[in-house]
Length: 361
Ligand SMILES: Cc1ncc(COP(=O)(O)O)c(C=O)c1O
Image (cartoon, rainbow, N blue to C red; front, side):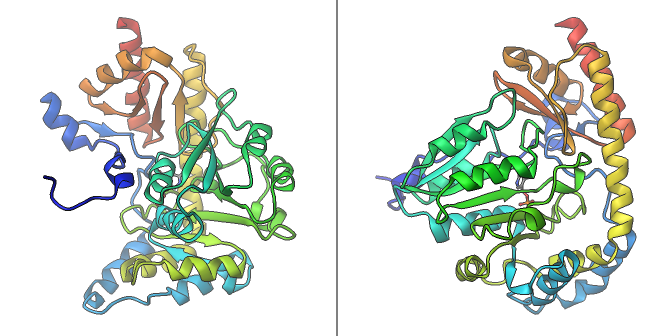
């Protein structure tokens, strides 16, 4: 007899698989000096003003934080020039994603998303008993006509990671508009912009260019990546006030912790310094892409803080050899390998290790 009667939907689910840490790889392979380029983290610590704000607030954690993160919502609204009742804060953008699923998806309802994409999507859909409707990528990017065609009267949500994880490709807001115009107004189109700050191409902004006139567009963003606050877990949504009200009903009490709020507020205030860090990362990304292409690798354009190598079955040979040499990247077995942009030295090591492994395989 099993312990407790777990819901069948949960029993059938896989757990979220975080990227392997450098320490785990060192233990497994008996090596030292491994580097982790597997979770699309910022390789740099938060800017000094943010670290100081976190340190100054550390003594306050005997109290709960502000459940609604009101100051943070107000700061985001002021920064983005949107009404404050259009802003929700959550425990990472994955927290908000789960809130969207809990608020909008009943068992049997359909959630449409391109695939491969962010691995949290199927887990959240399965959690709510929803039906996953996946639409294959074409040339590593969204086939938005096929996404629109996959929407039925059972569809509640369309999930689009833009840039997409793991492929790093991105679509212009005009393409998103064509999709939104084909979708019924009561289907929420969620544009997950976890990597938005790394986009250097002119792809428009769904908040200014799409949300006016399309109240069913929900934009998710995060402080985890560009702002370097992954461990603190702050994400935010910009959406119609009606959607924000429903999201707030399913927000776990005090989910956005006090240090996360303090740090995110300080990060908004220091956003010019943050931009300088982002610029270093995107310059490195462009260098890595150019270097890989010069070495003959075929890869899609990279719009986020990672590159994607569509190696197919070769992934299963190259990835373990990279890891044995202390370069921990993210494999998608039989499909490809995603590599986070690190410091210049880490990127050089990745490029040299890949060349070495490729020469031997
Ligand atoms: C597409 C996408 N959305 C959301 C997230 C999660 O971000 P957060 O740390 O805000 O939960 C990630 C993280 O890898 C991601 O790739």
